[in-house]
Length: 88
Image 1 (cartoon, rainbow, N blue to C red):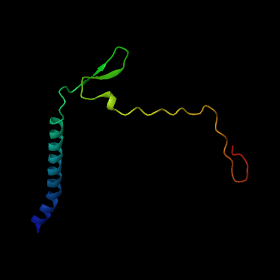
Image 2 (cartoon, rainbow, N blue to C red):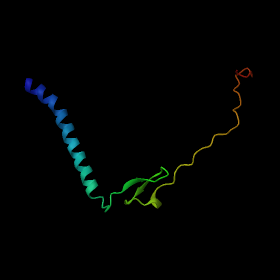
Image 3 (cartoon, rainbow, N blue to C red):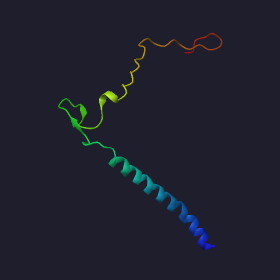
Image 4 (spheres, helix red, strand yellow):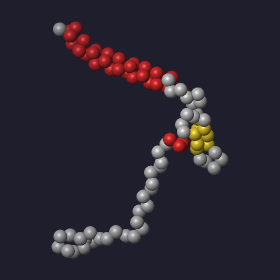
């Protein structure tokens, strides 16, 4: 009976350990088979901008940056309640 309780307590830990080792192996395999000759590095220019230099990343293949929505500078109309009165 005690062996069964110990085994039941160890099984989740053993399963999590096996899953972690499998994920680590997949990550190592992915990195080693990436095929990029130069890993790339970030360089900060004199004006403070940071850019990526020397990597397998092609800027032409990246999606465009989202367009920033400029809020309307006019004030919003006040809300009205069901009696037709304007809320303060």
